[in-house]
Length: 245
Image 1 (tube, one colour):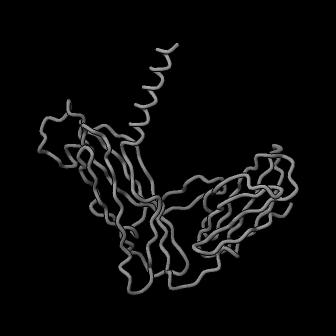
Image 2 (image 1 turned 90 degrees about the horizontal axis):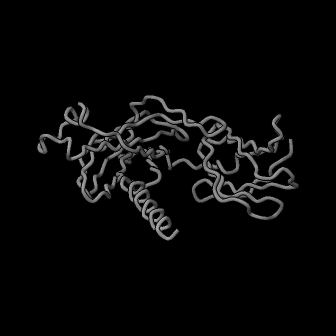
Image 3 (image 1 turned 30 degrees about the horizontal axis):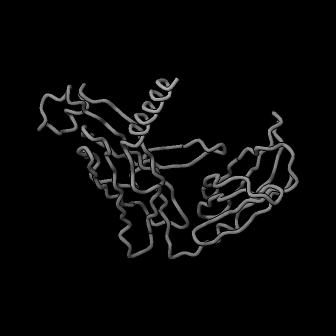
């Protein structure tokens, strides 16, 4: 039994190490599209493996979400990432610059960055000096995990009352599941930072609702008298009472 527990512990450590091998220093990027600003940010990628270099490729996409939180990604030329690929040594880092080059906007536009880890095992590397993209993709590479980072492009010189533009309704679905439909008619995304059910805070953040969008969240309980959502946008925050449908 002790031997089994030890093996299980070691397996957990190995899995944790693998999961943490490829990381990023920011969970999101806010690009200021106000006149006079450069609209450029930096993001750093970490390679925490102890003995293997990796290549990281970077791409940008337009981003929307459906009502059930599925990502809807499409091609875009609004967001530039440079360089588009870097080699990161073991225990090293690499910095990518991200720039908005799209048209002037009102409100907010949303995008996603995707960073793909591409490993080149030592046993497959025939020429350590060859770091070109061609050498990586032609049969010697192992595609690893991918990380996506949301990008919000906003003209911060414009004031927003997005947190006050949110309404929510509780509905009973045909399946019997109780859900909350959140409508954001404002010009910026909001975060549902907390949920309060019958006076007791039940959950932490449920995530974001993009501008001019609707999301549906399931409730964990079938019998509810009152549901409130803590809606935040930037520095503003307010509790929204969920009406009953």
